[in-house]
Length: 190
Ligand code: AP5
Image 1 (cartoon, rainbow, N blue to C red):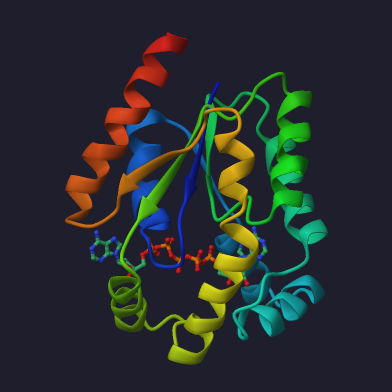
Image 2: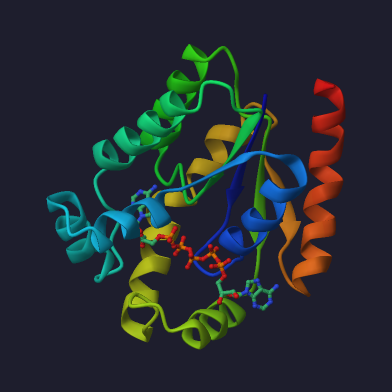
């Protein structure tokens, strides 16, 4: 299996690039943000509680997102691999993912971190107009990212599985940079 984590701050292009990567490599896209927005749209109790936190730019509890990812991994036993987008976002989530993948006798192939200047991130997010894309919430999302998510990089760097990718430029240029890293991983598995 090829399991990629697309890492990076809010607005760095994780969702945009995931859509292209799943098409090229036949992997399954697991976005905790999309899963939570699905719960909000369905007005489930989990969704209502998640919305309260997401509207403030705060992370939802680890147990909630770990449970969602666990169900998705179980539901896809024949997958060629996964692209994780927006997960793991805390060291506790990263440790839980290690255990879940271990049960499937697989591991993270690489963590690709999209690096974009903060001014450009803010511009991209304000142009999109999602409910959590207002200046106040964006600032809080960045604080959460720096305090809780950025340390996840160390978890993977310890195993030599963390690579910074220039996330500036056109979508196609960034896709080519990501493909350059993923192509050899896919070839190894053939
Ligand atoms: P989530 O949905 O994961 O949001 P995020 O990480 O803040 O990321 P975004 O979706 O804003 O950005 P992205 O990197 O995917 O960029 P995108 O491709 O969309 O999480 C939302 C909330 O859910 C969190 O705040 C938290 O509350 C909760 N949550 C989610 N996962 C969680 C977890 N694991 N634990 C706890 N809580 C969790 O691009 C952004 C914009 O830029 C788009 O408009 C796009 O068109 C544009 N764009 C993309 N690429 C380019 C480019 N190259 N040039 C110009 N514009 C571009």
